[in-house]
Amino acid sequence: MENKLKKSLIAYLFILPAMIFLVIFVFYPIVASIPLAFYDYSVVGQSKFVGLANFSRAIHDHEFWVSVENSILFVGVVPPLQLLSILLAIFVNRKIKGISFFRVLYYIPVVTSMVAVSITWGWIFDPQGLLNTFMIKHGIFSKPISFLNDPRFALLSLMFITMWQGLGYYMMIYLAGLQSIPKELEESAYVDGATRTQALYKITIPLLKPYIWLCTFMSILSAVRVFDVVYVLTNGGPGDATMVTSVYQFQKAFTDFNFGYASAIGLLVAILTTILSILVFIYGGRKGGMSYY
Amino acid sequence: METLNKKSVDYKRVKAIKKIFSLVITYLILIIIAIFLAGPFIWLVSSSFKTGQNIYTMDLIPHPFTLANYIGVINFISIPKYILNTVIITVSGIVLDVVLASLAAYPLACMDFYGKNLIFSALISTMILPAAAGLIVNYLTISKMGLLDTLTGVIIPGAVSVFSIILLRQSYLTVPRELIDAAKIDGASEFKIWYKIMLPEVMPAISTIVIFDFIGLWNSFLWPIVVLQDPNKYPLATALKYLSGQFNYKFGYVAAGTVLSIIPVIIVFLVFQKYFINAVAGAIKG
Image (cartoon, rainbow over all chains, first blue to last red; front, side, top):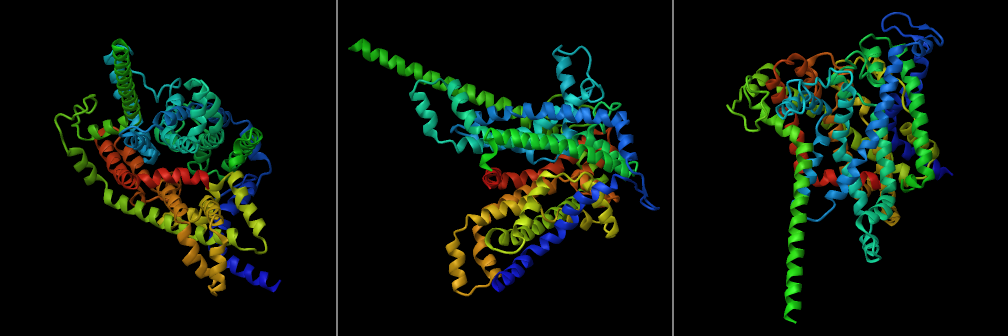
C-alpha cells in the first residue's frame, strides 16, 4: 500500500509538467467556453449575465444559419471526394522505377502551408489567371469566370482547394493500409479466376475499411474546422456565399470582439459536431471499421 | 513443330509489347497526376521569375527572366526575420511537446498509480469533446498572463498535445516488461529507467511526433493572427497573408514571397521524406 503511494507520487512527478499546460489550455477551455456563452462579455468593463440571449440571437441570425449550411455542404462534399485518394493509393502501390519520386511529388501540397496553397490557387482561379487564360485560349469559355467572386462557384472552388491539398495525405494513409494487406490474399483470388475489379471490390476495399473510416473521420473533422482557405481567399464572401461556421465565429470574436455571442455560436456548432462524430463513430464501430484502433 | 515455336515467339513478342504499352500508360497517368498536384507550384515558381507585363502568360519558361520580384519582396519585407520567428515557434513547440509528452506518457503506460484511469479517460475525452470557444478562452488566458503579442503566447497553448501523449503511451506499451524489470533489479530509479531504457525504445514514435508537429507548427496561421498584433513578430504563413493583402496588385512579389516561404519546408521534407512517409504509417499503427 505504501509502495503504491510512493509510486503514485513518482508517477505524478512525470505527469505534472504536461498536466499544467493541459489543464490551462486544453481542459479549462472546454469547461470555460460554456459559461462564456451566457454572458455579454466585455474586455474592459463589467461582463453581464444575459441568460439565453446569445442563443436566441443565433437562432434568429440569418448569416449564422447560412454559415451552418455552407459548413454542412463542405462536410457533405469534401470527404466523399477525398475517397479518390484510395484510387491514387492503389495506383502508386506498384513496384516500378521512380514510383517513390512520384509519391513524394504528390505529397508536396500536404507539407505546404494552406496560406501558400490558397494564394497559389487564388491566382489560378483569378479572372486573368491561368485557368481562365487556358480556357479562353482553347475556346472553352467565351469570357473569364471569376471563380472566387461569383457566388455560384466560390464555395465549390474552396472545396476543390481543400480536397486537392488533402489528396496526398490520405493517399499515404491508404498506401500504408494497402501494404499491410498480405499479398497472398489477392494472389489466391486471381488463382480462383477473379478479375482485377472483383479482387478490388471483394478483397482490397473490405480490408481497407478501417482506413476508410479513419480517413473519413479525419476528413469530416477538418471540413468542419475549415478556416485558412476561406479566410485567406474570400473571408466568407461574396456576400455570405462562402461563410462557414469557423470564419463566422472568428469574425464575431476577433473583428467585433463579441466574445459571448461567438461562444454561443461555438457551443451550437460543437453540439452539432459532437452528434456528427458520435454518429460516425457508432456507424463505423458497428461495421467493425474502427476495431483496429 | 516449327509453326508452334513461331507462335510462341509471337506470343512472347505480343506480351512484351503489351507490357511496354501498359508501362507507358502508367507513367503517363503518373505524370498527369503530378501536373495536377505539383503543377500549381511549378507555375508559381515560373511566375515568380516573370516581369510585370508577362506575369499572366502561360509560358512555363519565363522570358524575359528577372529576379526583380525576389529583390523587391526582400526589400519590402524581411524574410529572414519571418523565418527566424517561424523557427523559434516550430523548434520550441517541438521540444516542449516531445519532452512533456514523453514524460507524461511513461507512467500512463508502465506504472500502476492512483487516478491513472481517470487521467487517461480525461485525455481521451478531449479528443471527442470540442472546446466550443477554445480560441476565445485561450486568448483571454494569454491576455491575463500578459503574453499577448509575444512569441511565448503563440507557443505555450500548444506546448503539449494529447495526441502525442496517447501515441507515446501506445509505443511504451510495446516495450518488453523484462527490460524494465531487469533495470529495477539493478536498482535504477524510475527517471533513469525512463531516460536510459524507455526513451531510446520509443524513438520511432518520437520521430512521428516531430514530423507532425513540424508541419503543423511551421504552417500555423490562425492562432498567430489571434495573438500577434505586430507584423514583425509574424511567422511565415501569417506574414504571407499580410504580404498578399499589401500587394494584391503585384502578383510577382506575392509569388516570390510564397516561393521563399515554401522552400524551407520543401527542403526539410525532401531530406527527411522517408521519415515523413513512415510517420503517417506510424501514427495509424499507434
